[in-house]
Length: 382
Image (tube, rainbow, N blue to C red; front, side, top):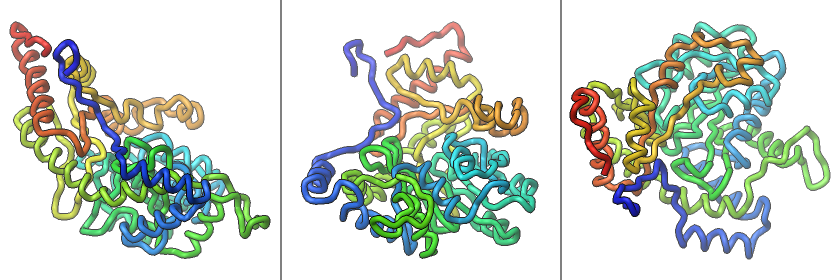
């Protein structure tokens, strides 16, 4: 509660505790600041967690995507198919690699890229697909793999919001040629700052990405490819190792919180709830995103009652100013993505979110719609 008696509930609450602080201090005191022992241990542990052979850390999720595209041979004149409903970095990485993003609209049942739309857009110039596991809900990876194999294209899984999520009991990131993750502070696990990682079962791909992230270095003073400076700092890796140990527990708490939201909000016809866990898909609810017609009004109402909200994302990638300028998008090209951007609302979701807080949020949402249906009864803010 604040001084006015209004409960304050954040949208997200990154975790940093004494164990992480001790790990960070130990790394700073005893290891190289760059590519120290903690970096390599973190990579080994993350690869093992995802059920793959190799992991290469980077300084961001964007770098993970960018370097993966280069390592897989994507080049100028190539096209890469992805969704317009993601954070802009997904498409930016394609441009960074010199290729052209080709957007395919989403499927409304899970907000992820539509399989039929992918098929329509594959051409001889298509070099890769980047499916995005939006909000932590798995794409239909077996069918995406089949499409890719039938057309001879690579798969870069954008799992930047899906750490620990599973499709058919297999961790995301392990289906494609590579899987890419971000450790930005709002994610299900973080490294205490920016960071990313690529996972793969291909040793050659891992070795190329490892060079690319370290200035194209073959050895200390010999560089045999044009690389980048995109390494993960040792102190960040040390924090990530502790967070990784907690990830499954945190994800389970997110699923429990999502189940309670689903129960408490299911009676409201005005709301479309997120896709639920099923026999094939085990989501991790990086975000809990509802779809509502009066999105901005509900957002203001909740925030006036001390409940922080977010919009992920109010502008789909193709309608961002730079993409309008580059590719002459006008609006109306990807109607399902555009509708989601106009109706999506992220409400609080994090492991430490208490059931009483979820009940309070639900009550306030019910009050909002009660007010709309009965204009004469205007409930007071707490």
